[in-house]
Image 1 (cartoon, rainbow over the protein chains, first blue to last red):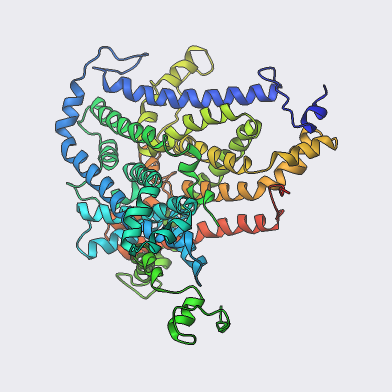
Image 2 (cartoon, one colour):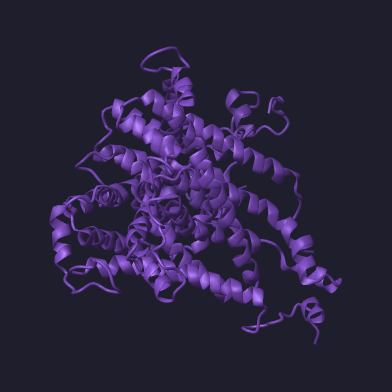
Length: 289
Length: 306
């Protein structure tokens, strides 16, 4: 069967691993890329358990001493507390504020709807560095810069639009007649939201919340611009440690990096149960009207 | 939307001709208030700070309204940040998007390979540039694994200098940007109906012709958007330019200059001026790409059913 016939009849020509040299080159390049990423991660993990590693393939000996060192010297209990409060706080507030807006944008048409869409898209399209500095300046003038509240407020900027865009398709999937039926049975608006929409939206709320958590834990710029010395999130603390290594042992910095890595991975794999990898980066594109 | 509301189909609940009735006919009623909190958030925390920054950039500590901008463009060290940023962001975006296209294209039919690769690639995106920079410092260092392997197999004789220079930042942007480009371009590619390609094949088009004449024109708009997003990400490079770059010379990029002015010299006017310049340069490039994209094919990327 020639390829043309196979394709035209909707069949798939499976050439499998017998492929052209170009494809092999591509696969090799891809494997090289992924291998390097794996090696970068592996060096961080290996070094965090090493006693000394100045050259050669592996550290001279192994110890978990640097984890307790990092735990105390970098003040990780406080850092993790701040990270947790900021991430969960941002997720909760963004859901509370964003969900009603997502409902309106999914259900209603009104003059200026396109402007509203653009307003929610823009903060996701502009890199945080560009609006982060004016925002931080403003927050410092208002007296909440350099505090936990400041970090939280700054992180809301990309999170509220993210919730709106992530939730809209979930609202669109709910049959509007359900709301009508609830109203006909005498439910008030707040009851419709709490008793009918919220349970049906639960998967959407969960995935939007997880997306915000992942984004906030990894958000360097906004947290960095607004964090004071005692209110650093984990990624900011890691940056400061790397930026001024000084007398700190590199193993301790890598130990902190491993803790950050584990936090990211735990969240990522929880999130991947609800959303596809493509959705995680292509929110904007997938929901564009 | 300046047309008068049509009274004919005005709604029944409110009396015809009343303000509420007329507004409701156009879709405005109290229900829209639900969207107000989110709008207020965006206006207060995104639009207002941006305007505040714009205003601040015209209120320098000394001199007239344009003093910050004049100082930026007359100081060679500051002016060079534009070139330093573009020199990184443009090649990185081109390499990432071209590479992502090459990897994504053969995967348009392989569902399993797609899922495995997508999951592998989301990991470095989640880790972010700070963690990747940390790993690079050891892995790509003079005693790192890469240099050891290359020396052991005799490819090089002295270690390559891959960190604390331009290439360090380039590599870090490749590592975090390529997966992003791959996932975005793949999602655009899989949105193209395979029927187009089958039709072209049935009409005798060669694989190259199918790519060049059928897929590429349909893919181009998505590629344009992907390029813009990748360019903007690379343009705003900050942590890795400090950690694995040479932040006082070759990788003294716009965001580092803005940060330095705001947090080390407390010259907020200058910091905001740099931010505005950065935004303008960035928008200029994005506008060029989108203009080119607007001239490309416009039409359905799916075949109508029925």
